[in-house]
Image 1 (cartoon, rainbow, N blue to C red):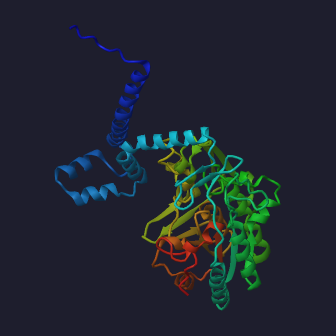
Image 2 (image 1 turned 45 degrees about the vertical axis):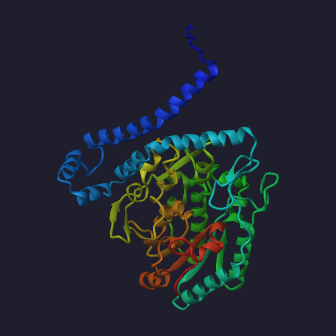
Image 3 (image 1 turned 90 degrees about the vertical axis):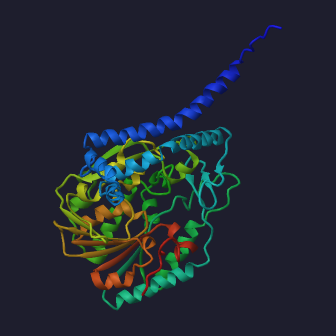
Length: 431
């Protein structure tokens, strides 16, 4: 009996092609990522790291030397190395994107399991967020802050709490049908009321930004919980005005004038924290704006590990690497400002307009404010209490002797987890 060969249907052929692409793509992505690292090494694109140095260390089986090279201070090399190691994960990110597209087509306004607690909601205007419950420990946090206020008053140091806005607008929450309420503004309102009743100074940027008449959500990224660089710069200008009027700072008008700065927009560059969890096809990508002064600057930044750099505003406080056009899941443009959160940093203004010393305690919203605030004083000390379990705010204040301590927190920092979260806690002052 003659054997007949069955013909594959179009659907079967498409399935075979998709299967081949699925199997080959991760290998191709991995090969391309490592090829990029190799080419950059051969062409000496990484400052301080040479191809021959790596080959020599590998030939000598000097593991310690190889490790030292891989954790070299050349940040671009380290990131390319990490991305190459994750090259096979590029297919994973594609699956995340397509999953988000399916959710969008299905009209889903909630992606379960997309964040560490309740998932990600898409508001009625397309912005992504997570929701925060009412906190029961606000009185305790306020009590700690007022204790710090008394500590500073005894030493003749001013204290100011700056409330940064959260993603959800008090007047217009834009929550989708079926979403539970968000209590981030309620938590912030309670905290502000308690500390002001206790005699502490506060600046509520939620109210100040609301007075501009702009849409609340225009102050934020669509795919992230942070405010945009333009909004952070506006918040800085409001803070600088208060420092002049209430705390007698002398600040050059050019430092707060937008005309003194260059604003450069990078379209569709940013996929924020929530967007990375839902995929880039669930909503639109964000543009990102790089802001730098047109006037001359000279600053010196010192970290707790002894690393020190002196140069212009752009050289010291901005990291161009994070503006690279690469896989949006692997790059975080928000780190363009200051390079990321640091447990402790000192920034000296070598062209200071006054002799004032500022101590800024902040969460990640402070990244945008720090570079510009450094231009308003002789010495800016910054601390992110989440980043170190051993850091003592009280000891640092005693050592630095600032004129004013400023807290710059978003409502997310007023949660139960802030007491003992990560390495430290946002209200763990160690007085």
